[in-house]
Image (tube, rainbow, N blue to C red; front, side, top):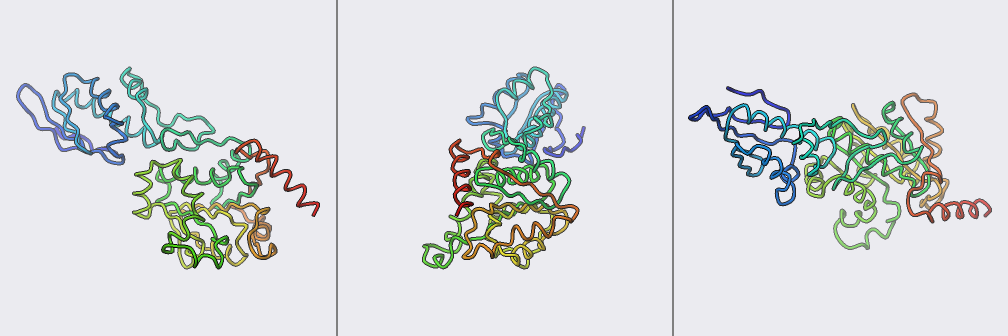
Length: 334
């Protein structure tokens, strides 16, 4: 009476009882119990209500089911659908459970063409502009991408969404986000705290994007395990990044040598995206920025994609477009 093992749950062989009834223990894998059960067990209660003849007891990642073997199989199949659906969508709702109760299969792969990933609290992260969509398309064909453009155009946010999707789909094993801490300069030593506390303010935009896409508890666990890593560019030296999705943000503040160091970290089964805004160079001399130079050098190389974001891609407050346009006008005149 042993059942076939599944990818996201496992169970011990059911024990037979009088009257043809069995007891089965299902072990949840690949999902936090609270994400499946819902707040105050609201999702679990809706699912259990569909099987009034079964006795179901859930404790953490272990679910004990007592009843007829055929009904337990039905329960486990529906449970698996919910787990797989969550793995793709990143969230479960009461409507999802009720839809399943109505006999309709949940299609975990049916998504809007522009949706990149379903983030924390059911947030939908999608490609909203032409160049954001272009970045998503080129990602499928290239292992290295350069995305440059003005503040607020979504280049880094879209890149991080692609990284989170790749991690959820198990295309890669870790995400590495980095940026040069140029703004800190010599003032870094005067900031309070250890090195991490000194650098965190300069890495905060990366944390903000991740918090939109990964539940807080899971993100904390990922960072403890090293599945998600955020570090200044200087920490990349000497590493080989295999099976990783790596994003270099604020690349306009890197020199040619730093970009060479970063790009040569690429290992097997790796995806690299470099983002930057050449109008916001914080280096002591603008000429020290190597981003534009390196992009020109690499233009003929196959396997590298380039996306040039512009004012039409700005998705922040409507005033941001006008601010960017005005600054560009007067900076050009000067």
